[in-house]
Image (cartoon, rainbow, N blue to C red; front, side, top):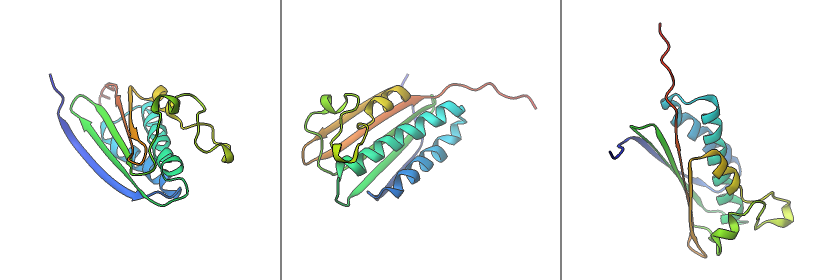
Length: 150
């Protein structure tokens, strides 16, 4: 049985560092309607933050661009987010997925965070090409919380 989208939102914002926290808060606010556990909420916030940070730091480097954040929830309690930039792109996605790989070694970054995202989410897909930007698609199925009797 195919799931149905019950709510979705699309945001676009400049690739400035202050918007990393905005994206994290937006993801938390949006998925709150599913009443996630504390751990699920933390996982989603961290994964979205990592992907947005990648767009800002690695995608646009020292340039200003636009980051797009699209989020959906489905009737089967799946949270899906797509983080998209039109930055420099990734020439070798497989290499970029390795722990501690970075395009910014001068600033002592600890990698692009894809390993972190993979650990927190159920799925991670990265689509990118040099000069074409990058799309990061993540999903997480949220648990069913028991109802509190009142």
